[in-house]
Length: 397
Image (cartoon, rainbow, N blue to C red; front, side, top):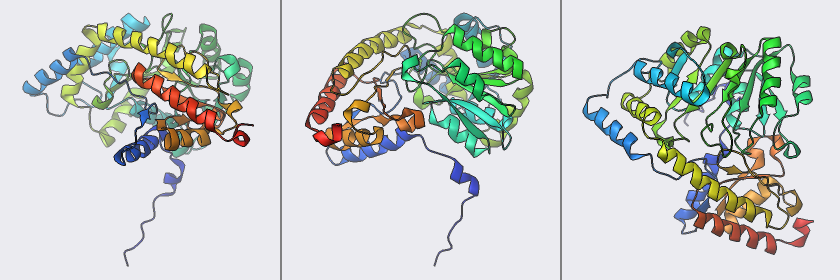
């Protein structure tokens, strides 16, 4: 008999990103010949702009196939600082910038470097599930910061302040926000900045959707007085330039954290792909018309999906201010979030995510990614409507 393998106890505390689990289930249905409309995955359905691909090809031909510095190519780190100056009005030393294979390592490395067992990590709920998962994994105590529909999925300042304790080590914010599309206001950021300064707490600001904002300009908490030295900015290339498969992210860290993050990189991934980093420079400093066209198309899809969702029985949906997600309230359908998400996939061929995939405060909601064609969005809405209209009355009481 083969000997059973016992995994480390810490593996009981790490979760999974539900979007990929649902994607696997949806692909299995498609393999059986079923038609599935994919509104579950947070990935632009556009091609990476041609000039970025061309630069990667050129870099390969030039021999950019070897190891590079752990924190990233100096040229790319400098390009990131120029980008931040233009789009965030931030003056950042390139030595603060760290390039990683995807943006998730910024979360992982920041939490590993900062959080001791028993330390509290505040995170948005509903919110990207990896925040809570990684806090638990390192022995931290996740503290949910509720985002409620009646506040346009922004936190309540008094509730936020009441949750901060002497054990709070890290505050995580995400604006524009996944899964709701909500955006923090200047006043919201001011409250967080004031608390962070007063209590000497580091803020991890997830700004991966900063260029996918439908009105106004993105504002980073790092621009507030005395906040650059206590803020970790998380950003990357996946969403803005449709480069999810390239696995490229960057973080801006307080100077004293950079050597620790570099050691984590050395011990885990060594470095980020060299030729991909050359392409990343082209993305930051080349034509931006592809970004503009993608955002304009997302705006058209946003209008269509929000209008369609609000016309469904038992459904209401706020208009998201950023990103490419709709987060409708489905409480009046009579279904729980998971029940409806499962039935939509199995019976209607519409892949979506239960709001509870993003935390306990996501109950009563679904997340639909509108990173799909208008044709598919309209067909998905038709299928959802048909399922809700045919649902047993007892299920909708």
